[in-house]
Figure 1: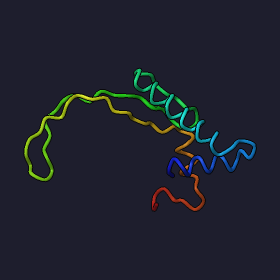
Figure 2 (figure 1 turned 30 degrees about the horizontal axis):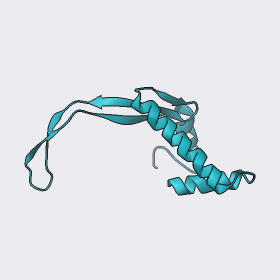
Figure 3 (figure 1 turned 120 degrees about the vertical axis):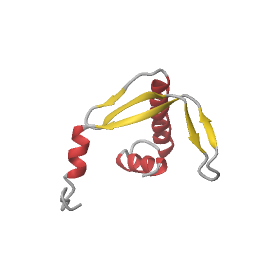
Length: 101
C-alpha cells in the first residue's frame, strides 16, 4: 500500500472529511512519528506495533560494483517491531496455513 492508497482508504471511510483534509491528517501523523524518532522517543501503537530509532555504529563496507572498501558512517535507523495482535490478524487470513504458507 502506498501513501496515496492509504489516503484513499481513509477518505472512503470518512465521507464527511475531504480527501485534501485526509491527506493533511496522514502527513501530520507521519511528521509527528518522524519527529518523535528524531528525538529518540519510542512510538507504540497498541495492536499494531512499535517503532524505535537505533544507532548503527560506523563500519567498513564494500562497494558492490567494484569491491572497493568504503567507510560507512555511524547513523540512526528506524526499526519496527510488529505487535502480537497485528501478527495474529495477518496469520488469521482465511485459508492461511502457517506450515505450508
